[in-house]
Amino acid sequence: MRLLIKYTVLVLCYAFAKAGLAQTPVLSPQSISFEEYLGYVKQHHPLIKQAELVLSTGEANLLKARGGFDPKIEVDYDRKKFKDTEYFDQLNATFKIPTWYGIELKGSFEENTGEFLNPNLTVPEDGLYSAGVSFALAQGLLINERMATLKKARFFEQQTIADRDLLVNNLIYEASLAYFDWVETENEKDIYDTFLKNATTRLDAVTRSVAEGDKAAIDITEARITAQTRRLDLEAASLKAQKARLIASNFLWIDGIPLEIQETVYPEKPELSVLDASLLLVGITDTSVFLNNHPKLKSLDAKIDGLEVDRFLKKNKLLPKVNLQYNFLSPDANRLDGFNTANYKAFVDVSFPIFLRKERGDLNLAKLKVQDAEFERTATSLAIKNKLDATEAEITSLLEQNNLITEIVVDYEALVKAEERKFFLGESSLFLINSREQKLIDARLKANTLSVKELTAKAKLYNAAGL
Image 1 (cartoon, helix red, strand yellow):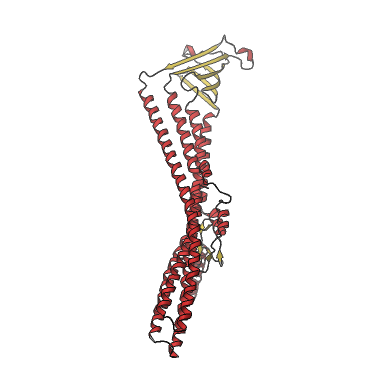
Image 2: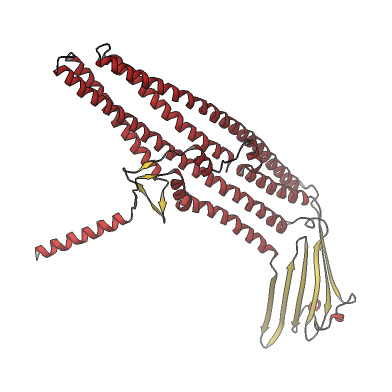
């Protein structure tokens, strides 16, 4: 019995462990290119879906604003009966069609009966039909709340499109930086691994030379210190590479599940032409063209347009309210000639605040909001232009720096090889070799950093351009 229970527990533990592992997929090819990496980000990252939600918010707001122009059916029914006496029985059914300007088309039917009915509600026995129009002559004619809401919703939709583009742009930029940092740390690890092998080989050679009596025993100690130092540097570089790999893993998802990049996976450093294609920078010669289509400026333009609509609405409220309503009346809706000017119902409503303090205050606040947004737009445009110019200058400078550091590395490699030949001929020392080699290591690390900085500068240009 105990064996059966123990076996059952082991099977269940294995099943749960397997289920848990299935929820954390791993990415374990030999290498992953920059294009493949961005492909995972663009297709599966949750922020991409979040960006689409931002766009859906704008579309929902626009749909809601359009609802202000939907036709409406209204039915009012009121009846009072007490002690077998029908005081009144009133029915009023109305169909309204709002239009763009402050005009509303309306058709209605009234049927009122009762012993205590208000005389002005008296209608023919079969009811009374009416067809007419109501409109505002001053305030509300050129713009009203309904029109302003729809206009602002359209501008808000444009703003959400630009904001969506900004979200995606920043995500691609951050993912690119994480990938490039991973590339740099992996290259740094390879550099230290190569020089550790060199130091180990040199230690073995020195050990043999000492055994043969060609070198002093102290040379073994110096060679061993160098090898241990290289091993220490490699360990630190491996830790940096592991951290960078995990950070890069943060951007990889599939079906809502985060991926984990295995230690055996290596990033491929992209060529500049491939990078330009991935970041949509191919054929760009003049960065000033980015200013016209930058999503941040588009977002601010849409925001300003929405505030201008609000300002115009507040300005319109300085006008007096003059609302007119005119309805043709007829007891028979089947005969169009029954509606004529002899039978009508008209209504006029006029109001005007004397001091207009509330209206003038609202207008001043609306103007200040527009000015604030315009100042923000001007400052943002200048900041984007300066960032584009600075990034373009950085790319040009890094291209020259990479050419220089490549030549420096080649020269240091020649010096190290020459010093090694002199050492084994007895004309040099381990100290000079290690000194030369340390300079070479520094130059190789500098070259690695500058090459990745050039990739990062391209990503900065993509980010600054808002592509």
